[in-house]
Image (cartoon, rainbow, N blue to C red; front, side, top):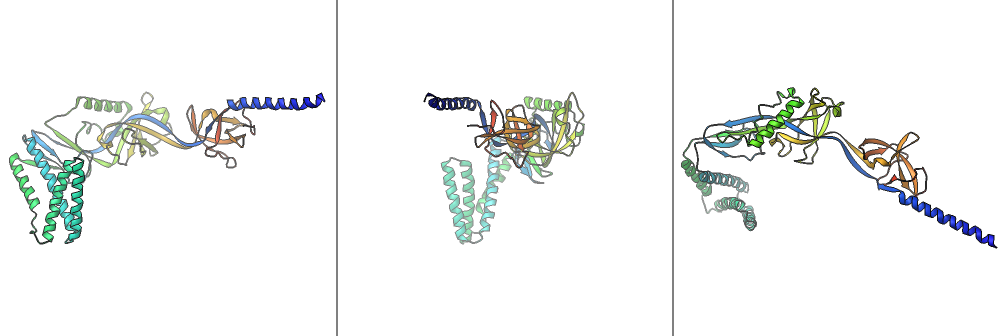
Length: 406
């Protein structure tokens, strides 16, 4: 009788012990959920922009009335600035600028009104729209926009009156503005000349002093030390604000092709050749990745080489700069992201252990790229592929194919 109870008790004790031990093992196991990711073989550096630039300088005492905002795209022959001989009253210049803007608004509104031809309904609709815009901008206290809208409204109202036979075709608003402009020009009372672009591109309202030092025509001579000198010159120029009040300097930059010279460790670009495609990211301006082609690689200096890359993608504000922070991306790797401790070798095969149906399963992988802590991998066996959201075992007391995991 005693022996009959002994056997079940021993079995129960063994099961409890196994459950306890298994609990300890389970507590020691660590997992991570498998997700996709991207890693970059990247070098963070500084770069010197090399551009096709047409510099405009006008010396002597005078007053400049800029007509284009810096960074704006311009066409060939576009008016960049009016340059007046001698000193001009700034208040009069401000009035002239406002009148010129109103004249532009009136002309645009006349074209807009003319497109409606004799359709009173469309004109009324456009007039109503302008009134609503005036009210909305008035509530926002955007008075400059209100002024433009009032001018446009006056022009449309004149057009409606003309179509309705209440007024002759002569535009009173435009004539009045042009007379005002003539009076202001008479007050200025000095000769002026127009500065127009000789080519299309991006207008830059200042000079950094490096336009003649580095160009696409002399960049082949760049070395790591010369790139450092250019960066130092640019830094000094900006620190000392090399501005001459007697000289107005601006430039037009070709926005369809430019270059950037980057100093990088020679050992990181051993396999890089001219003509190869790389990627660049100007993090201070945008998170966008820009494709670039390696134009040339300099001779090595103290373990460093200068890589010149050719770009053709326009990025806002980039061409206004000379020296920029840049991520030089040799390669981008996409795949599954796993911690390096999760990678093991079994019988000469590299892979990871995952938990499936409460058991350890060894899944072969290809390592695409890795750092000391993280790797990007892909499935190496189509019969045993990794699956998104797999539970990858990062730490366990033992690793064994088919081992039970609670």
